[in-house]
Amino acid sequence: MAWKIAPYGLDPNATARVLSTDTSGSSKFGAGQTATMQVITAHRDVGITACPGRYLYPYMTQIRSRATDLLLPVIRDASVSPLNLNQVAAENVSVRATIPATAQWSVEVVNEATGQLVNSVSGTQGTTGPIAFDWNKTDQSGVAVPAGRYAVAIKASIRNIVLPPAGQVVTLAPPPKISKKITFKRISPTKTKVSWVAVTESVAPLTRNQFRISSNGGKSWTKWRSTSTTEFVTTKWRRGQVFQVEFRSHNIMGVSNVVSKRYTVAAYAPPKPAAVTGVSLVQTTPNLVTASWIPAVSEYESQGFFTRTSINNGKWSAWKKTPALNTSQTLKVNPGDKIRFQVKEQNFSGFSPAKTGRLTVPN
Image (cartoon, rainbow, N blue to C red; front, side):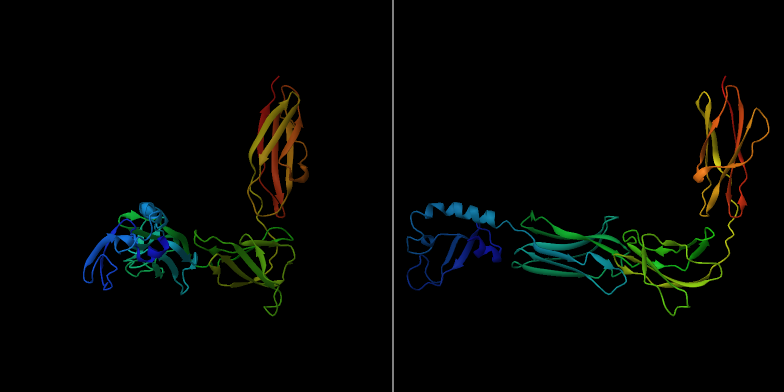
C-alpha cells in the first residue's frame, strides 16, 4: 500500500472524498453520490462484498500504521556538483534532488564564513519528483560572490514536518596567479636560490609548484619539475652563465599563468655575517663551563664560528674554529677564574663583529 500511494503524497490516516460512478449496483454508493472514506480503506466499506475477508479486515488499522511508517518522507537522490569550482570559469553549481509530494522545498546557499544567505530558490512539489537549481556564483541581486566556502542546503517540509536536509559545501576560488616578483640569490659559491610568489585564496591553497629551465634562450627546456614550496636551490649554475626559468603553480581549481625570467649568474658576494646573539656561559661541573650562542639568521652559507678566551684578564687565546658549525663549546676552568669568551662567524666575504660573554667561576 505504501508504494502505491507514495507518488501522490497521501496520508494513510487521512480521509478522502470520492464521487461514485457505479451503475452496476455492486457499490454501496450509487452514481453521483460522494463517498467519504479513509485513504486506505477496505473493499467492503464501499462495495457489496466481504473483501478483504474476515481474517484480514481486523488488521486495517495496523496496515494504515505500517504504511505511515514506510511513507516517512525524505529528500532523495540529492547531489551538489562540482564541489570545487573555478571562480573565473563559465561553470555553475548543479543542485539536484527528488522531493516528496506536497512538500514545500528550498535550496539555500550560505557563506560558511559569515553565515550570510547569499542566494536561494523555493517551490512546492505537487507529486514526488525531481527539482533542479543551477547556482551561477552570484547573490540574489546578481552580483558575483567572493571566493570562499559556501554551504548548499536542500530543505523540505510537509505539513509542518521538517525533513532532514541534504547538501554539500562548495569551495569557490580562482587558480593561483604568479606575480612578477622573482628572486635569484647566490647563497654560496656553488648554490643559487630561486624563489617566486604565487598568490592564491586561503580556501584553495597551493597544492604543487613547478619550474623548468632553459640554457639556450628557450630553444629547449628541461621537464617541469615539482616542488612543495615556491623556491628551489641549484648547484649547477656557474658565474656568467645565462638561464631562462619558467614558473607555474597549482591549486584545486587549476594551474596558474606561466611567468618567465632571464638570469645571468652573478658573482658570489654576500654581505658579511651579522653578529651572533645570546652568548652564554654556564658552569656545568666544578671545572667545566659550557659556552653557547645563537647565530644570526641568514640565507648565505656559513664557513664556521671562531672563538677565543681570556682567563683572569690575561691575553686572549688564538682564534680557533669550532668543528662542524657547532654553536657551543666546553671550557676547562678553575674555581675563582674570571672568564671572557668571544665568538664571531665567517662567510665568503669575511667575519662578523665579535660578541663577548663573561663569567666568574665560584670558589
